[in-house]
Picture 1: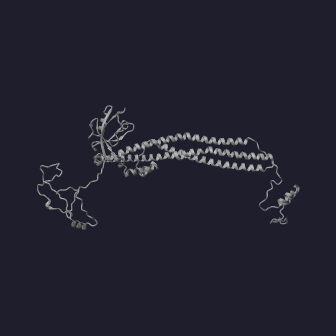
Picture 2: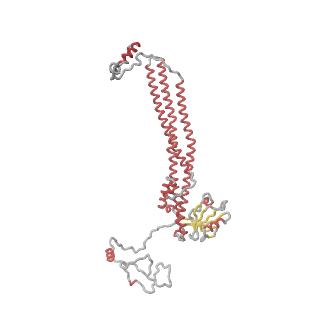
Picture 3: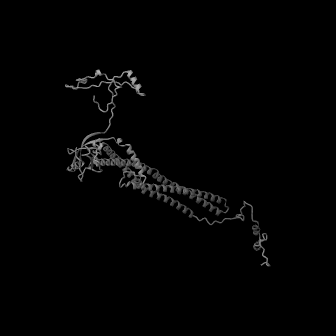
Length: 486
């Protein structure tokens, strides 16, 4: 008997009944009755294996740690596993633009690939505006002419030779994007995140290949957002410190007012008492002006804090989502570049590449995933640009208005204080003082008695005492000068 390589039998485990093997011509029964072979040829029949219970036990002895179970003779139900990708056929008519183009890039074709497919749909082109064709779709015919066996250059010329519109027959690829999110794509996203935080020279020195967006103006907008955030953080901190300082100053004004009011109550001189009372009342009014000013300026901190702690973080959250979509899109771009390089290397060596010869479905799946990632990236990019534009407008308008409000509040406070103090002239004030007004009780012992004795003498006597004190009689000099020894 001839069997395929996938079948292996062990003679000592499968016992056959030789009487069931027919020699010569044998007929095969057809239970369904649908097909009848009138001229049957020689057929070799392999009967099912007949295994007895004692033979099962003998097999278990020969194969330890394995339990043999008699199989059910009924037809097994195979699980319905759907693998691969689904395609559907269709036709679309696309109007050309002024440049005689429809806006697609074609790949594949003879002699390496049996089919031609769309690599990319360019933005703002007739194909993109129509929305029927997508990356990875197979081109079957152009204006009713089959493109099988043609090169991509020939198909491009066929499209260009059409007048104003092109009729394209296609096989749409229904691919699940989850099949394209492989471990390789996840690792590429991680690599792009790492490269984003380092310089190009460092990445090149480490040999990290990556995809880069050219002329990305959003990077400059993000840097401007960082500077704006630092500016608002400094404004909020400085304004909060200033208001706290003014609150402490108003409390000092209140203490001043209470102190001078108490002095005015105890002052026996009527004019001086009234002056102290009014001076204390002025400080109390200044304290009230300060509290009113603080209540007016406190909402400025809330407005600046709303911009700093809500508007900017919300924009940063959108930016983080945009960055994730950006890294995913760049990862697919890098994957496409690697697959292109692989095809070029095999073509240079004139060796066949299995995935290309079988329709290049893996490459087309990555193309479809790249297109969807690019669409998501473009949408989030537009959202980020809109939010950044709104933040810039709010920053330009709001910060000027808030600073003007802050400055006007301080100016009003100082103007009210100046008007209050300049309304009446209270000083100088005449106060009746007693002879003991500036005599203070000492808290420590008196160390010098001679000075007190000097104060009790008359002025002439003070001069004499000073002259006498110039001679130190208590401490004679250590060296005596003798005239004879000179």
